[in-house]
Length: 70
Image 1 (cartoon, one colour):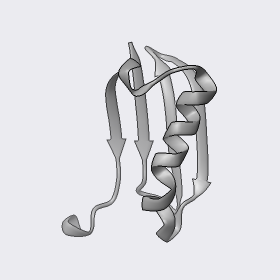
Image 2 (cartoon, one colour):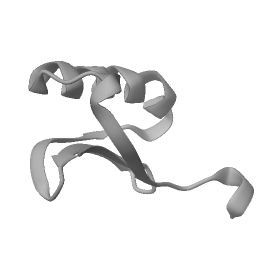
Image 3 (cartoon, rainbow, N blue to C red):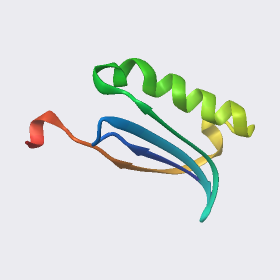
Image 4 (cartoon, rainbow, N blue to C red):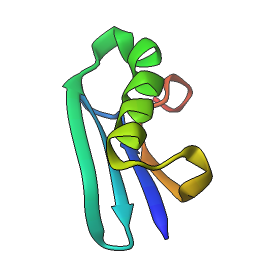
């Protein structure tokens, strides 16, 4: 099963793609205030680089900071 991981609770955003426990791809970048502009583009690139599509994703694990929860 393919899983997408997303972490946005630090200055550097992180995304990863896993097949079970095997890491297929990983990327981190200084997202800062541009996260909403870069996140989808980074996910698309990760999927393209691994030959996967959103239809292949069985689940998403996310950790992030939300303004509503401070």
